[in-house]
Image (cartoon, rainbow, N blue to C red; front, top):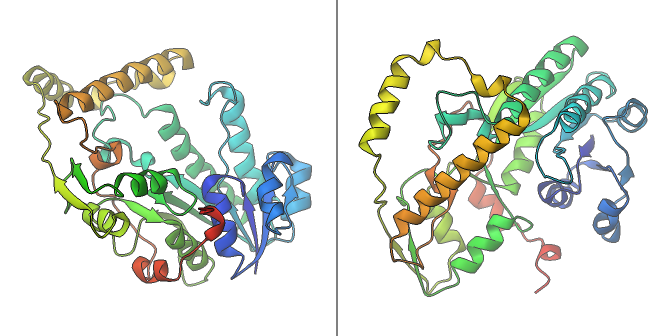
Length: 342
């Protein structure tokens, strides 16, 4: 099976190259030569192409059985979404489907953020989704619409919080849990929505099988890990973890306001959807400051307590891809020293 990995030089894409190379005829596809340097150094035959361009898509995907889209374009100056980058992302999805091999399978990497307030309590319930969340959900719809038109199998995978040897979360957790004492502000039994790259690889290979029905799936570790599972996996043997309950309480005024808004929810116009992007960015900035101040207020004087915004997410809903392998078993054989030079 020939697998085209679009966006192979991203942090997740790069790690998947090393994992998928063992089981597929891998074709890493990268937009520029600079991004291909690391993979080429390790012997990968990278293809330099911009799949949002028709000629590049036709030349590089016509012989591919399975196309995996991990790429997501943002404005290089602001690292946020503008109209031009949104158009690139949409055209990339359309071209990947249109110019891939007949009867091929397309997998689009979405995000659990697409669930919006259903899992992230910091997301406003009464406005439209923030730009990133909204666009990811829109691209899922583009995927299914185009796959139906081209009669191809399409999967949108809402990926959880990614861990793996090449991931920033992993480096952060390893550093924190190398200490002797780590106070943590989260319920240890709470589901974590964490997914390791070995399980993402497993999900990709399962989607390639004809017995899996195309559609929208959530992807987290199998079975889903609690935060205690995550901490125990990354902590040193001598590390002692102390769980601190959250002291955050909803202000009475906020609670009353929410009740009023909730009662009129179906009549509210999603104003943010129609606002110019500069206004939406300002709203997001203010919301970010509010969340940051709330997080700081919960710490009080305990400067060493560990808190992550990932802790606030609720358990991700399904459906899940059936018959995935046990993540802990997969991790036993997981060692990519190329990402751990020390």
